[in-house]
Image 1 (cartoon, rainbow, N blue to C red):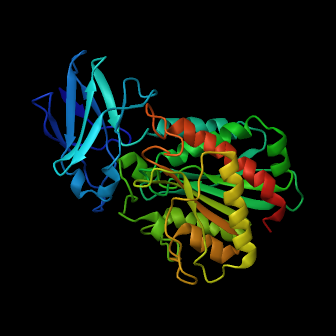
Image 2: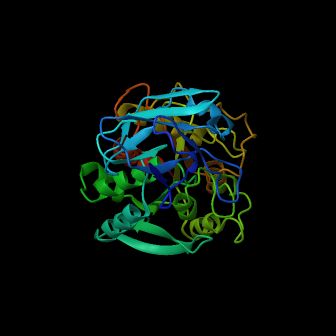
Image 3: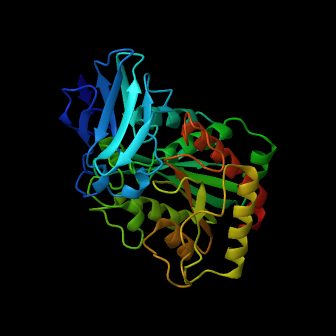
Length: 374
């Protein structure tokens, strides 16, 4: 058997692949960081009909070791159809198996969103009549960081920002952005109502270096971008600096930061209740957003992060920094690596398709609320 990870978002270390009934592996740390959790590899030389077992032996030392409880690894024969495989976790690692149907298969922490697919998404977006490349930043390793503007028809539009995949292992975030762009290509009454009052500003992937390198949490400098918003720098977080500069020039009336959560098997949102500038107006908008999204899609409010105490928000986080700086509705939307336990789908768990559908629901909510955002 041959184990490979020398490709886009690949991450694995082979300890011993001599026994196909127990292939011993480890997850490589993020580039320039101690974080690790994301894995993605190709196993070649599988024997159809035979059960192959894999163990990630350092999983108990990973960044979010509690995330492995209840988690099921993903496999795919063609890189398109991903399905969950039997998985268990103990003090010896994360163990999963596949009764092979073909001679090779991919395994990953979540359904990967490739750089090639990212390029195709940009091409599709820019082919739409009301979408343009407004500006393009650059990552530390020189990868493009496109900012797309979706032009509405208002003379003085509200400005709605959506960014995704600050944490590079959270591939569900760019699947979300693909769903959003797909809906833009098929305008309906709700979307027309939204664009009659707003322009959209989209960054489909905030961390292209980290995603390509197979990182979980950080960029090429080992920086967690979602802890850099209070003091970004050209040396460690140019991705954040680029977006902040464009926000200052354009303005922000609503901000959504799209993420994935390793531990919580639910779709949820985190708001700005701990910001020093949080007001009853913003509180009412947050409550309305949650209520409408719960009615529109796979979203719930019972499970999520603990609320910040008043005035105690971490302003290094994008959601809090943007909400405070621009006095606007700002949310972090979290999707699971596992499944959405309110609506379990055992074969796939939470996946790219469901992330895309959530984006459709979010656009509907924004259309319903756009006239009250400012």
